[in-house]
Length: 382
Image (cartoon, rainbow, N blue to C red):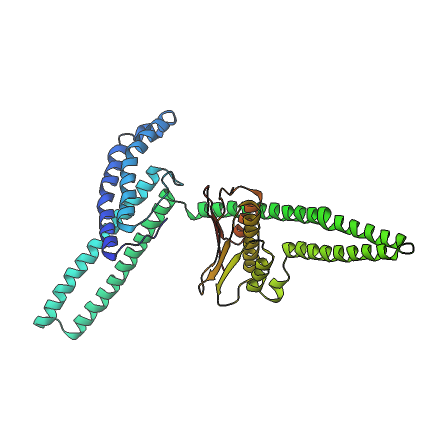
């Protein structure tokens, strides 16, 4: 990681230290590489010579790593080996460090000349034409020197990032891997949701419809002989039809709540609270509108977490907080007072993690044995 916070003074000292550390690197490469030159040219001994050179270069490269961490605040993965070997980094770093030292020396020499110029102006040793020429020349040289110093410091940071930390290519490869994993997780979550809806329809709604049809059939067959019995059966059928409608409405809400489209996330979460078997307290602290995919993901995170708390956690109460600062991510926090021990690798939580990851979000689960269980989803709103 490049770009830790350090003061300008610390960075300036780091640049000067980089100029100084380039000298032993160059001396090592020349002093060791020249005697081993013949071995490097012979194919049979080239690998052996390279191992010797690399072994001696690693301490110098480690010194450069500590310089970047100390003066520039960079943080690098401990086990990252970089895209190139230590010799390549040391060779390029030594060259850039020496060039940077030359640029700094020229800037210092220009500062001395500027002091002498000011003294000459005070003594009246320069005419207007000579003074203007000196100022233009000095300004151009100062601009070129500062631009060169800026480019060299940027090159130093880039070299450190490529060798000590993930390069742009490595970051891109990791991003592709993350997208592949999240896409596969979303596909699995969708398939699992379809199977769950099919089970709800088959084991719940379908069975109730069969029972409703049987009640109506019995009422039709016995209506002529026993009107009172037929009226009782029709009453049972009416109650069964109401229960079927309620269960069908519940299945539809779990598939996709229509309130999200018509009323928004806050009202849809209110529907979750109405259907929850536990006392559910919701704090909604979002001022403006949210992107539709973010609303959908937040709804399902809350719905699944509340359902798990009611079914598996033996909780007595659940609290939900949904908050978003202007321009910031949406934070969804669900906490219950149950027994804890939720498995982050379980089917439901894995599906939620895939749904959140598909939006470049993060899902954190804290569920120690004995509780409480806290689930926090962070969803970018861009």
